[in-house]
Length: 389
Image 1 (cartoon, rainbow, N blue to C red):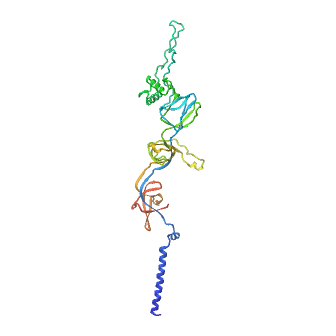
Image 2 (image 1 turned 90 degrees about the horizontal axis):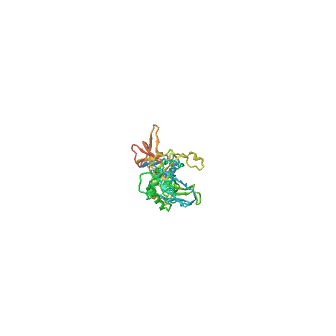
Image 3 (image 1 turned 90 degrees about the vertical axis):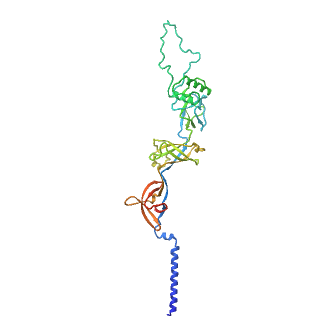
């Protein structure tokens, strides 16, 4: 074979080799990653370490309303002749209802009237004492001494309630005693005159209902024409509140005086104050579902709105209550699923750098909402770590 022929053959072989190499190179670079993944294990999932704030605050479901309803009863005999409308607000001195067209009025206080307040006066023309017999009459009985305490002034907490209300309504100067005085009697008469009632100076306990403060009529329990000796009204406080059922074993952070965030049903956010936390645990409501048997007993917390105007336009509805908890600011955080339990104890994270990984031991801090605070040598925000989910 000539020298020229050998050179041609070499060139042809070289071209084939170069062409083949080009084909192989194309297949390696442009082959889809999915094909590679299908031939081996799935690539590890990763997340970034972030620097952020952690908080153990928790969101709970509450209900906006006016709180517990209380029943107002009548102790008068007669027929109900007037009732307020549901939703009406009644304040000190207002008429709650009427019996035989006589008003039953609202007084503020903590002690109901349990007796007649005032001194009754004998009818005009009636003798103040029985006629005396002649001194020498054999039938004259000996003069009986006055009954013990007959002239003792009426006093007590019910008298104080009357006096405090008459003072608040402008009929009696400020007083510090709980005794019925002539000034008190005169004030009662002035008050009765303002109501176009008989000026007797005496208050019948059936004519007054003593409640802690102003009320909102929640329901009407009687009808016009009904006998008065029955339940008449259901009333609540006038301010809206949030009732919050809480698992009895999960009341951390829920204490009297604590501030909470409220997301109201009208879309507004405000602050509330926990005013009371129940101590009687009750089973949660059940709809007959067998799974309800696993629910925990609950207590109820009552929350007042710091700004009543925030609830304008809505009387009831669901509320999201954010209860405060411990917090950490500006810490390195990863999902709990990124923690690896070490055989020798403690935890590590698997840090990914390029195509390599390395285990770095970490110290855990606060856990919250599926995340955990970590510290460890060389860790920084932005690094990727392997996670299981």
